[in-house]
Amino acid sequence: MLFVRQKAKVEILEQNEQKYKEDFKEKEAFLKKEAFISAKEQLHQERANFDETVREKKAEFEKIRAELGKKENEIAEQRQSVADKLANLDKKEASLEEKEDYLAETIAKQITELERVAQMSREEAKTTLLNQLKDELAAEQIQLIREYEIKTKETAEEQAREILSATMQKCAIEQVIETSVSVVSLPSDEMKGRIIGREGRNIRTLETLTGVDLIIDDTPEAVVLSSFDPIRREIAKITIEKLIQDGRIHPVRIEEVYEKSVKEIENKIKQEGERAAVDLGIMNLNKELSKTLGRLYYRTSYGQNVLKHSIEVGQIAGMLAAELGSDVKSAKRAGLLHDIGKAVDQEQEGTHVQLGADLARRYGEKELIVHAIEAHHDDIPCNTLTDALVKIADTLSAGRPGARRDTLEIYIKRLKKLEEIANSYEGIKQTFAVQAGREVRVIVQPNIFDDIASAKLARDIAKRIEDELEYPGQIRVTVVREARVTEIAK
Image (cartoon, rainbow, N blue to C red; front, side, top):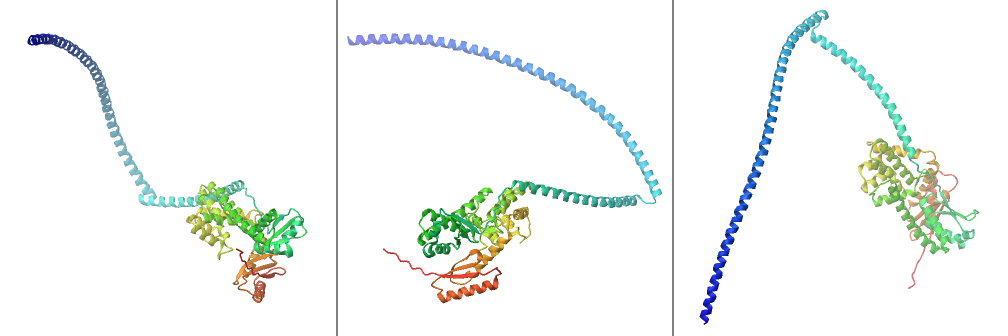
């Protein structure tokens, strides 16, 4: 029974398989027919596209052929025209050759006739004519050169006046004449007694530390500070103002405030040097050189503030350089640094020109700047335009009416000489010229000088002052020997 069932299933499967095969064959025939029809249609479409492209190419080819035919006709016409022109040129050339032969023959006859009349050959006549022309041209050349020289000088002088006039109008720096005294305002006359202190100990401490002469007289609510050194005078002024504000005035406090005032002035010097460089637009200036430049804020030359003078020289030199189309930055830099040596000429040997050039070279300034510093007082010749501009600007700034006072400079030199004489001895701690140069106060080291040696030192200094200086009146020499012992309680 099972066998029969399986056999029946097999027969059914075979029938299904046969049916599937017939269906597949029908589908296969149908698909082939569709593919054939699609390929036939595609072939027809491609053939139509090809025919269209061929027609377009033929039309384009015909158009090009027509244009080429037209060009060939034009070229043929141009060729014929060129041939006609060549023929005409040949005729003209033949005619010109005939004329040239005739002219050559005529010129030869004229030259022969001229040589017979002038009784000299052609070369001799040419040489004579050239020599005559050279003489005439040389005379005219000399005359023209003279005229141009005169005109150039007149123009140069006029332009120089215009440049200097325009430059000076742009420059508006104030001129400040420094004096040798400063005035400190007091809140009341009672403060004068506190500044003097018991038995004058406060005022002695102030004068000893600062080297400034304090003048306390009948002037209401004011103390006058007298010193030729503006740095000392400024330190003393700041010290007294701070003491007045603080209210505690005694020797120990005076020393503390004095040390703070010294640091404050050092910062002020640094700031003034940096400000001067910034005002002139000078960057990358060496810090030590900038600090040295700031010292000129408290330096005067013939009564003229040297830092303000240096800034003015830099500005004038820069404006002159701009007018002349030269290097403005180099002119400003050289003008600002031209008197840098005056910041150290009181401490080192040599002229301010030599010291300034050494400083600039040491701190990496270009040789152009160093040369301008060396040349601004004709120590060496001016070789560059920057040298000349700095020299001119320095003369303009110094020569301005009211800018300088010779008498003040002579007075300050005498005070410096007084200090130099005293400092030339060994064992000197500090020396101050006070009371407008009428007294030299010398502070000695107590471990080197005893009382007898101090008295001898005073006589020796007084003798040297009499021999080496000229001065009105008398000069007092005061030698101070102070022994101070300090112990710390722990």
